[in-house]
Image (cartoon, rainbow, N blue to C red):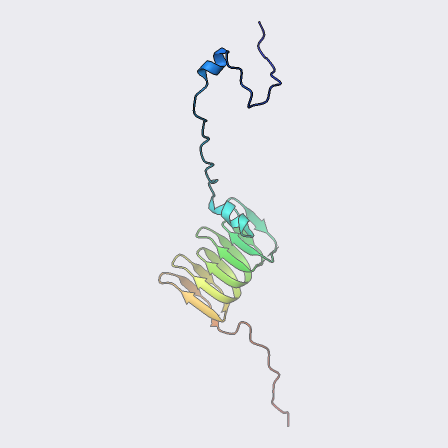
Length: 161
C-alpha cells in the first residue's frame, strides 16, 4: 500500500476512471475573497511614518524624529517631531517641539509649536509658545501663552545717548 503517489500529468489531464474523478465536483471551486488585514492604531501609525512610544515604556533622554511622534508612555526629556501627540495617559517632563503638538495627557515643561491643541483631558504646566492654539473645555494649563512661534527676532532700534 502506498501512501503517496505522484502524477506527472498536467492539471488539465484528469484520469476519468478513478474514484477521485468520480468524487470531484462538476463545478470549479471558488476561493473566498481575501479579507483585508485588520489594522490596529499602532499599525496604522507605523504605516504613516509615526513613531509610537507605548504605554509600558519609560524613556529618559531626548527623542528626535523628522516624522510624527505619538507618546503613550513616559518621557523624561525633550521631544521633537513633525506632529507630536501626547496620549491621554502619557506624561512628558521636558520641552515638546513640533509643527503641531496635541496634548491629551500631561506635559511639565514647555511647548514650542506652530499649532497647539490642548484637549479636554490635557494637563499643561509650563509656557506655550505658539502661532495657533486651541484649548478645549476641561483642559488645565498653568503657565504663560505666548503667540510668538515663528517670529523672527528683530534687532533693537534704540540708540544709546
